[in-house]
Amino acid sequence: MLDLAKSIMLTFGVQNVYCAKHGEEGFRMFCEYNPDIVISDWMMKPMDGISLTRRIRNDAKSPNKFVPVILMTGFSERRRVFQARDAGVTEFLVKPFNARDLYRRLAQVIERPRQFVRADDFFGPDRRRKRMTGYDGPLRRDTDVRPEDYLRNLADRDMKDNDS
Amino acid sequence: MTQQHFNQTPRRRAEFIKPPNTIKAKVGSGGLAEEILDRAQRLLENNTVDFLPLAEIYLSALQQGIHIAKHAEADADQEYVISTMIYPAMQLKANGGMFHYPLVTALADRLIQFLEVIEEADLGAVEIVLAFHTSIRAVVVGRVTGSGGVQGVELQMALEQACTRYFDKNPDNINPEATRVTDWE
Image 1: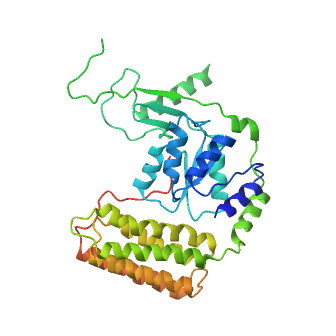
Image 2 (image 1 turned 90 degrees about the horizontal axis):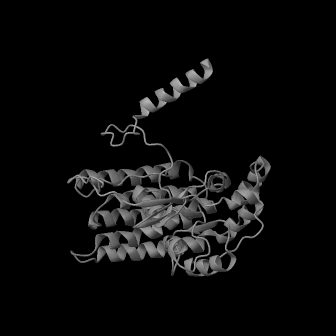
Image 3 (image 1 turned 30 degrees about the horizontal axis):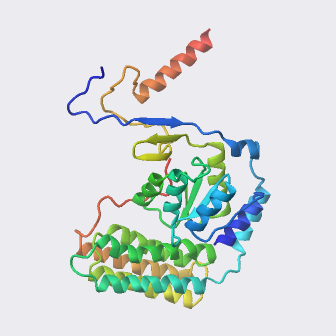
């Protein structure tokens, strides 16, 4: 799998691909080479991809805590995805995958990078990516608007701009 | 002074950081040509890795998980017990399709769905896992690459029906929060 992933990356035109057999070796190489992107499997021993991601995000030795981490795994169950997300994984790639799947994830981290969040109990990529819709609870701030009003306001503004 | 309401969840302090996009600066604009993507796809499809030795490792781990589940004490940590079967099943699902055994992926995927949903690996559940193990092993040892044709479909249906029958008999052994996604937005 490692060789296969490496070959695909080389075919994509990536110049330097560093391979490690498990998370511990991976973190050592990450510290040494400071790569632009990390692609990791979930299941590895002695250190798995989740622990590797946590180290990349939180270890004092980590040369780039903001590096995009793409996690490859056979899991697709919600709680597993959330587990990976909460560890600081940037993108999730379900195996088996095809070349376009991997390319889409790479394009995503390059073209639509996530901002990072530092909170008391979390450091990693912002776990939200799309605007929340369908919220019908109370509006708590002066600036809060309901989604439908937000869209209406945008349409009104566009019409005013066109009139002027 | 900030007004605190007695039943309001305390606000979490969070700092938002926008890291510099150094990769974008390196790769520039424009995506990969279709021809490159096709070449990468062909590389995946034409790989000659023998899946059998790898599958034997995962099947053996799954067999070990079944053994652990069969002999687990009544107060055993069920999450651990189930995980001993889920992890090798996940490896079979992930790697089967990568190495020309999509039927292994389909069967292992169904097994994972079953294991992710149950709350306890009781004897009935272990029998189901054993049936999956036997079927996947037959596919791998019989070198059934591809979908397995009509027999592959029948095998999947038989195992799915076994799962359905199990849940009909054991409606309480279902984790209601178990749902699956393939990505998060």
